[in-house]
Length: 550
Image (tube, rainbow, N blue to C red):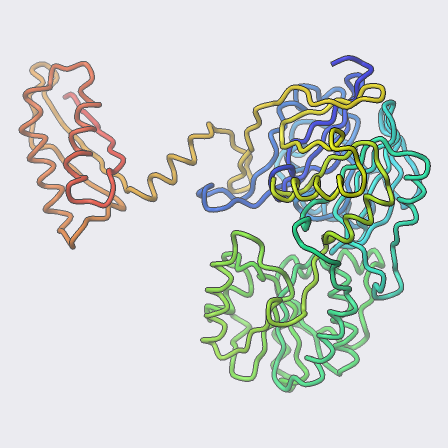
């Protein structure tokens, strides 16, 4: 790459939800904007989280100048500890994300030194060849930032995750004035959050949600359980305020609920009303109408607090009639089935369940179309790249940009691995990298071919059959009948597994004398067993032949 070109390379977050990570490179010097994880779907069997393919950065570590953080959600900061296993890092962050990253670093084996540089709104700082100006934005977590980035190729605006809320609780309103000022000066490129690009209109305000909660608090006679993301500090603070107003006692349930609120309190970012918080086990000492529990698990994560409550196995919470469970979060795509199953279990326990589709108890932290249009009209960029979204979100956001007057040829829809170069007054798509997501299992980053998880899914679908043959090393005669065992094999028509496997053993005993001298003996045995089992099973199983010469 020429020294007069600015390279923009997304390693995650474009063409998918989560794992946000963007490389800015000038004359060989690199910065990362965010470094997040993604939570896998069922296609990644046995995997805890996914991290970006860092190979491009790792091959240039000596020229990595820093990681700039937009906010503290895991899909923006969660992969920093894994990068820290490879090198000392400089991380630029406001205090709340810094505290969250530090907590994760303490749990990371082999992390090297991370130097934190404090970021404050509207106070520019320089990292390598770039100057970053932090701009406060509204999101579902405190201390969220956009950045105006002065580069040798022009000014870039990166919105981070944002929404517009003109009636924010506590008087903290963030308008478009800072972005309008940038637009008047001239912005070369806008990179803007696309998560809700398909949703028309404007997001609700947190004040609307507060009114909904106030109505519920005023009429509820039983215990209240509210499940929400622990990172939503402003909503937690408002629930504490309402609880104090209505004379309720509040208990936290869930590790992250405790750690996030403790960190926010230590940093002075949340106000805790007096005589309101109690221990979870002490809630039994108060009348039901005075009890509010804030808990995690709104996405039905395995072993989460709400999942254990729904299954009736939580040691401190046993639901009963009159209890009300409020799920103050959206159903994240991919989690719907698990969530609805959990809701069924909550009803079986006797509780009433309220969620977003039947009551206004949640509002998204990502702007709808009206807010995306506001940003585009404020910034008035020459070039536009939609970020943070699946392809359909990026495409819809690109159409909105064209509506506001961005020239169609200046709107670029790119996905992970596709680099874009800014040179002079022109922008163009350049080479594309073949990225492979990293997988984390039990806290350790593991690498493997992309086919690995296809194989794991096939095992779950088909089952596995082991074939063992013991033969004379000299004569190659079998020293007994072949042994055939299976795991996870599903047979049609209620067939007896022992009978089918014994049949496979008999078949092998007949076939073996004809093929024992073949060089591809194992492949032949594998195919013969697959064909035989397929006559009785739902699928051809994975077959593992083992030949022992003694």
